[in-house]
Length: 208
Image (cartoon, rainbow, N blue to C red; front, top):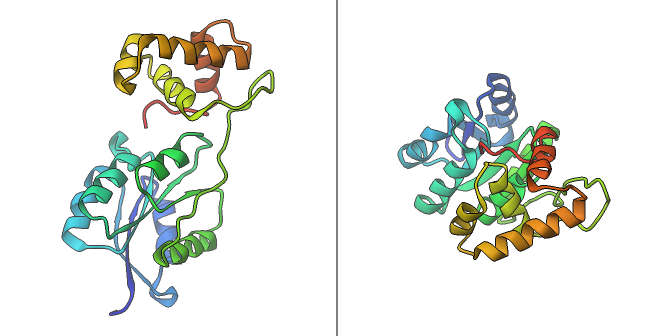
């Protein structure tokens, strides 16, 4: 088994873990040394078993975030390559994964062969991310800026403008400015209605 690329799979769906395990098999040059349901244990596993590659879902068992796990792994084990994946069309996952230092993001709608291709590219030193997704807006206006998306994600967590300002280290006036811009782009009369629209359509998941 020497010479095989060691892989850790983190996903709360057993069927997905099994499918990835079949794809990342010794015949393809890989060895899955761990297959776990919760991201909370991922960094500890990496410290003990030293995989070369981690493939983690964003939403995992016991509400553990694969994004948080990826950040912890990058901080303590920068040599490990990380692919973040999700079955949701959530628009913030891929850019957030990129920002925290993950090496790739793959939507689960892609084939298993695509996962392996991305893994090969990542292990070869590349980063692989899909084209940014935007929230379809009723009036078809310009997509939200990165800062507006940050404000919107915190709005979806039911945070007040004051708390958003503290979280992002910006002024209350700046938060209100971004909210006003988003309302102008979408045509919604209030930020509550905008947040409800985004949440009910699944474009932002405030839990992860």
